[in-house]
Picture 1 (cartoon, rainbow over the protein chains, first blue to last red):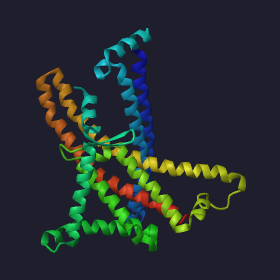
Picture 2: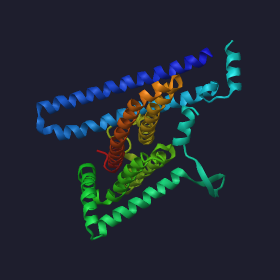
Picture 3: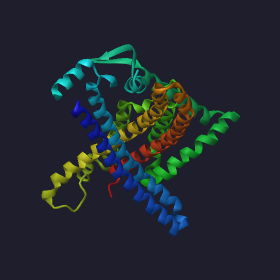
Picture 4: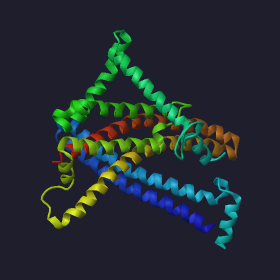
Length: 98
Length: 254
């Protein structure tokens, strides 16, 4: 059972690190847009439009991490009876973990 | 009855009755297919009524729909296509309104999230890919289009590598479009479900704690629901804008 638990930890860590990178990217983008709008308020409209597109693309990458995490957790859940896997699978996992 | 079971019941597609087979593939009527037809029929009826009817209701609808159409034409398409805007306007308007309405239809209770099905978003991304190739081939001629896939001014020994990278980039952009829309829609539903499941998790410990958590959990789920309405509009705009960018890059690649 240990390796299934480690699998869950690995999936969560991987998704979390992806999201940290994505959040830093979007934060930098938003900070530049705010600073540009503070220097020149009449450019605020076009800066906002230009900010939305990179933000949505980086968010797409973050959600890709979410999709991978869901698929991995779905595969891991097959070995755990309480999460929907069969008891026979849990028996096999416990036996192999010995 | 666990989280996965509820997710599978609400988000995955379920066949209702078989219709016909195309070779080995069984085309059956399913929930998502029915909702897609309802969304398409609803959009056709509402936009035709708003455009053609003389009644006051239609005038009100025009006041609501026309700024959106003008926004798509003047802010998204005109900066990219300039004089060829009228050629591409019908496709992009259809794309924007279909994605927006389908996203919103997924939020109605007892309806299904159509754009939360990866086959639907993959179909939309394939439409984008085909549009890129055909628009590029139509505007520039097929040979010129293929020659312009690589940017100009490269040493000749780099061209095969850059060509392969650019073609893979075209596929990667369309796949990213597909997954972005799909994951945004599914994530909204999953987060709502997770917040509402908090009630049952706490109720397994004691009923009183479950009841106490209920208002907070419903409030959180309501907040995520409102955020999902915003995300529906934003993702429709992003899909349309990125498709316009890619088709524009195929049509005049400089």
